Image (cartoon, rainbow, N blue to C red; front, side, top):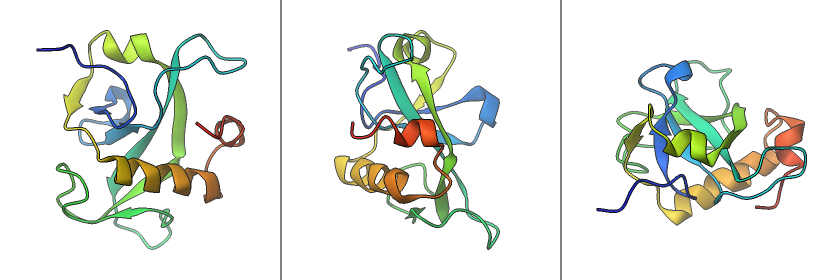
Length: 125
């Protein structure tokens, strides 16, 4: 069996975000200006509970195997990580996302007012 790789569409749980917050890998590893070599952009999904939460991309049951109730992509959580750091272990992996879902998330990343400016500056990827 091939080793898990931090590639576009991969998903994992980021320990600092809590055990039930799934993160999506939005691009294959690449060399971004002003970042370490071979980085990825990741963003988290959280349960939709409050009216003021991000609504740019809402995930319904069935959009991803982890989605058991309406959830949202929190574009303020978007960040850059070194691919090797994520691949190196210590992160619980989950089923990959479809390319259609990743396309939806990347499109939302571009238009959300909550996406950090430095992340938007990395687009397109």
